[in-house]
Length: 431
Ligand SMILES: [Zn+2]
Ligand SMILES: [Zn+2]
Ligand SMILES: [Zn+2]
Image (cartoon, rainbow, N blue to C red):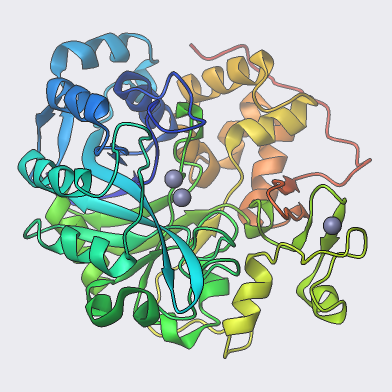
């Protein structure tokens, strides 16, 4: 395959993970990847015996280290999609998220890690080893009483091409730098194997710019993925590469930075742990307010859930706005269904939004292209308010209502009370 810029989404879950959609199967994942414009996806959950069996049965080798859906399954999916996206290639790489829970230095640590392997034999060896530690069939994202360092060792033992990326590094619970159960440095967490870590997942509540404030992270590539628990959420965050379509080329780009083109991000305020607070008490605070109140909730008197922004500021040794040499850029976007929902005045998962996005994708191409590249004039032919919303999005002119303590934030394109330009689509549907 020749070099083209492509989106990857390498953190997601199957229907075998807790709280995940029954539709999170390979067929729906492939369908939604095409609709969104994602080329390479993680399989998620390959440690789960039933999912692993399904992966073996339904996937066939494509480029080195990558797999695609069997042709007969793929043809059925292509028939459900408009010609604008039906033929786009979709590849999978074997991926799993593992949760390690253990005590270190007098505290309970709960850390999530993403593990990637280039072939089924390596995955089988990994699964055999982990099955000695805990039950892999109870959750697609296994929870194991294993030190993070030991999980990394097991990963590296699987041979060339095996690698580990700490997941959503700043989230209070489960992030390697999390305020509740994490560490202050990668070295503290992974010990003498820390040199084998070269990429970090920013998570929904932080973006690369926030991470740039910590000089100790300069050597790491920032990646961003959806952590989708249902297929329509695929591609809400992605990492962009300009390399051959090849597992090892992607790995090389993550190691060296060459060909790692940066990430597509939520506005970090939209993430569920951006600010501090207590959801149940209705308290949301900025890092400054939290410090003033010594981290205590004024309603219940218990410690606040300290979010990502506070935690970044705690570890930061740089001012805002400094971009380290060689750091890849990023682009902040809002998922297309949320924008269409705002324009239409209905929820992003409503039938009306789904139908409208269907038409947009059929006329203009995948959702990510509509958000990033499609000329605003082409969008205006279909909907003037949508064109205005996307023009604002691309300039970063958004209204932010930050998330906290598990509550998603909201990003709007129009001010509350602002008259949204009347929808004057000038042509009938184009297909
Ligand atoms: Zn996680
Ligand atoms: Zn996850
Ligand atoms: Zn409270």
